Length: 118
Image (tube, rainbow, N blue to C red):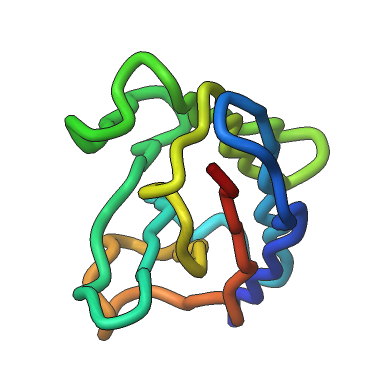
């Protein structure tokens, strides 16, 4: 079993920065992909960034150049560094980890709220 726990959300002004953390525990050897997703009120959940096999990274077009995903294997933690935040980045951010990021093949955290004020 894999467990996932997010932290680091909060309230920040537009243009500011936040770093989200996704702590992985349990049978982490099964984890091939870790991703960050977000869901704003009334919106569908969307992929923000993902890291595959610890190295290959993918980003949504809306966050390219502003967000960065990284993995610290020694700490079993994946980070999402968010810079130049915009009000439209406001959402609940979720971390998911698994063989893939399909919901039936991954474990999801409870989410952490990020609010960007204008």
